[in-house]
Length: 332
Ligand code: PHE
Image 1 (tube, protein in one colour):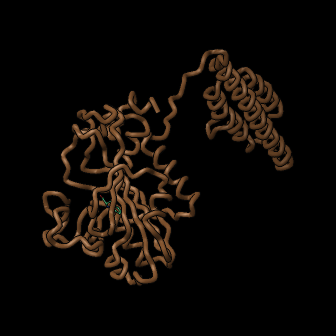
Image 2 (cartoon, rainbow, N blue to C red):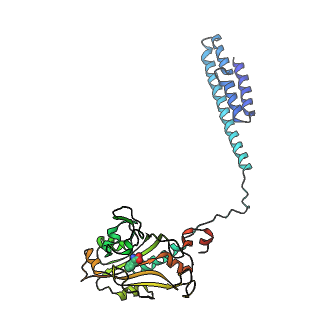
């Protein structure tokens, strides 16, 4: 029996060391150590041994089993290393090949302009605030002194959500004036950029969704001169009392960058493009928000971001700003 075990030892170790793939090693494990394997076959003959011999042979058999198992594990490790090496060799990367250029996006031209404007106002101590695009008519109109008959309230101009006309898509960022006055402590210096919506036909300077930046200062002794100085812009055209919530009001137009003022499709023949409305906050609006107009005064403006970007980058059609054609965006 000892001899049988010795020859099994030699044969099995040799076969294991010669096997060259994980499957054949598994097959050898079954062949030698399995229930119907060769070691088991030898152990079946234990019955023929004397009681003294049995434990000795049992110990030898256990030792042989351990040796075969060890040989199997060792061979497996060697084989998997070899397989990995082969794979690494087959999959080598040629680092000298030229790489594939990854296109990297960049900021949209309109947001470049917004960032410039934010920087200017932050530098002057203004706070940047954000507010709802779905708004109450109360905030979009009533609290801004825009009465029931005002044309901007018309169903043909404004996107209403409810038939009672209570909820709408804000048509301007001016409701942010009211939110600020109702919630912030005085004095207030804020700008509020955001989307606004109007039932406008799309053309070179109109879109049903566009961006405005509201700006407002409420403090003691604020004057129209401060507004002009702060904006550091030249008010090109004064239209008189244009907005019900400011008194007096003004509008800033830029000379058409396409035609230089002669009149063309971009400026619809006017030679000028309106970029902002502004004025002194109406005393009624202040007192409606609980601010004493005898102590405090304020100015506010609302500028159209797309049109400012058009001026900055000499863009002749507002639609280009929304179309997001990469050939257009790449130029900025
Ligand atoms: N809200 C006005 C508009 O949309 C602009 C404006 C803002 C005018 C603030 C005066 C003061 O046209």
